Length: 613
Image (cartoon, rainbow, N blue to C red):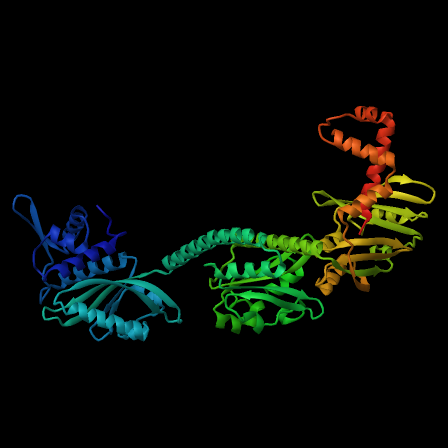
């Protein structure tokens, strides 16, 4: 049988059900009481048996196996001993409930509370206070109308309600109140007895569960959005098309309200909006700096621009770094924000700023997925820029110079001579090979860079070929900052050389390239580098006839014959259809002579391919 110490509230509930099902002293069967409680008969029978043992209900066997139960009517002149026992028993049951109990008369005045109620609200003795002391006016009004409506039935009724109680210190405490509405037979309202449970912990658990569900829905939705954007941007041929697609897809998703893309304006030291979707107009109303000393540079976007890492504000209305834009956030209904750098290799094309109506959005899982979006968009923009450069007949040639190049790495030496930096080749895993030629002993400059602790990306070098006037070399690099920057802008390096410790670089980029941003990124690679020349020119395109002319003019008859015979006989296939010995025999020359002709011809063709602009 259940313990009344632990489950005292169930017995109070059972007594209330008896009162609600019939008048005082009216016998009721177990099924009648079970129907009132909406419980199974066995459980109700056990409760009733316990209450009968305590004298709180009376019972009598009827028929062969039936039993009736009733509340003993209150006597008008109880003996002092019986009254004391009943009062004590009731107090025990009430305190054993573990919940607050409050009795209210028809006028709304508190007539009884237990210790749990006092402790919950912080009042020493609230008896005699009006219920409005603890409830909002609207809640009290709604409750009054509902209770009087229930009382009009002319019988006691059980009901339940959730609302907030106001503690003495002003804290709002959510509660669930199981209420016995007392009524006379004529429908007169006689007040209530409420068993009140503090549901703060339950509300917190429910809120936590809702947040988890929201995050899961947002994450699933975001995966779909990122896949959709990835497929869409690959079909777009220009940067504006890519950026517009990204913003539109994000703003149209269920998880986000608005999105815009901005680029860094190095002259104004601020973000300049390029495209916006969703709640249009927000980006035009706000100013965002990238200066950490400026109050408008401390928010997520400013931090993301400086660190090139995704930054978030999960509650923009409570985030002190978001204070400059909180009025606009309230107007547009934003509760959280993320700023995602659009990056490719060493270049940053701008930021994607995304806003959500969800507080506490951008969980770790969501953040990881949306950060990948910045990389996808960066790759797509870089590819579009390169395609634009390849299709354009016009190029902008810019000359950059960095004086005292070695000195900027803390190398206290001046090396005379010229070092030509001819080609940088990516070899995977973030590593590169730099090929060049040093004249008149200038290889010392390469040696110093490799030895310097401050030039960490110069890992090692080796000499490929040397003679008294020049040295051909290969340098292994852990990164190639300038080639990476130039490539992401759709350009290429026309010439690069170190002359008497001054670095000069000639770049060719497509018309329309943001030269200010390009220069800013170049300075991030090598502080002190400055543009010194700029001109627009037409890039020569070689036709197949021109290339054939080059072959005929650069190659000897025997070299061209060796190439043609080798090509058409399958010497260059793999596996080979004909060996070098077989091709040489068909040309009536020795194998060694054939291989010498082929290597020389290949070298001349590659010179035309890699050294031509």
